[in-house]
Image (cartoon, rainbow, N blue to C red; front, side, top):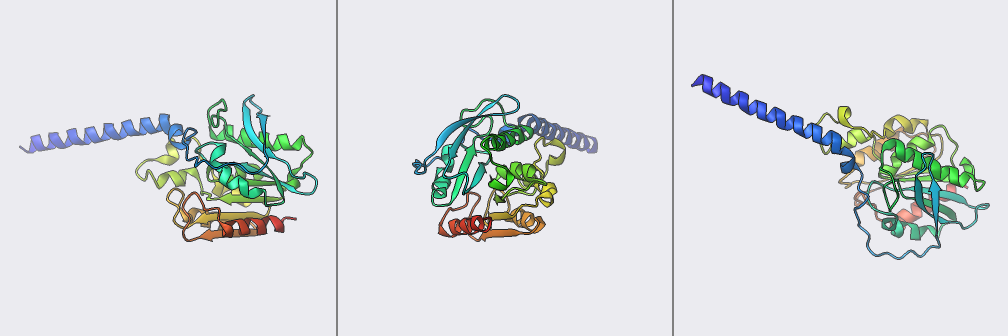
Length: 272
C-alpha cells in the first residue's frame, strides 16, 4: 500500500513538473504577445481638437513609423516627444493631446513598430530605435536636446529613461513608470523565474540615476498594473531637480483633470 501511495505521489509530482515546464516554455515563446497589445482599443470616440500633421519617420532599420506632429513655434517653444504605452493606437491618446494646445509647446507622438498600422514587431531594442528615430527627425528640423522634452507613458518610460541617459534634454516626464519590467512582471507571475525568461527588461531602475535633466514623475496610488511603489521608488532614485504628481485615486491610466494639467503646466513653465 505504501508503495502504491509513493508511486501515486511521484506521478503527481511528475505531472505538476511537466505542466510547470510547459507553462515556462509557453511564456518564453509567447511573452511578447503578453507584453505588447497593438490591437487593444480603448478609443472612446474623442475628436482631436489640436492641429496635427501626419508624418512618416524612418528608423535606422528601415521601418516607417506613423507620427502626429503639431508645430506651434519651434523657435520660441520647446517640443515634447510623446512615447506611448504597450497598448492601443495614437487615437487612444487624443484626450491627452487635446490639452497640449493650451500649453506653449510643439509636440510629436509616434506609434511603435507593429502599432497603428506600422510594420515590424515590437521589441525592447526595436523601441529604442523608434524613439531615437523620432529625436533624429526633430534634429533635422534644427532642434537639439535643450529644445526637447521627453514624455513617457507606462512602457514608454522605459524608452525615455534609456534615451535620456547623460543627455541635456530640457525635461523628462514619466507617467506611471515601473522600476523594471522584471519586477513589474513578478507582480503578475510570482512563481515564474521572470528574470531568466524575460527578453525585454526595460531596466528603468538602473538608468534613472544617469538622467541629469529636470524630471517629473506622475503616478496614482491605486494603479492596478504598475504598483504605485514603483513610481515612488523611481522618483526617490531620480536626481534633482525633480518634481512629483502623486494622487490617491488614479489608476494606471491617469485622469487628465485640471489638477494634472496644472501640474504639467507648472513643470513645463519651470523649464523655460
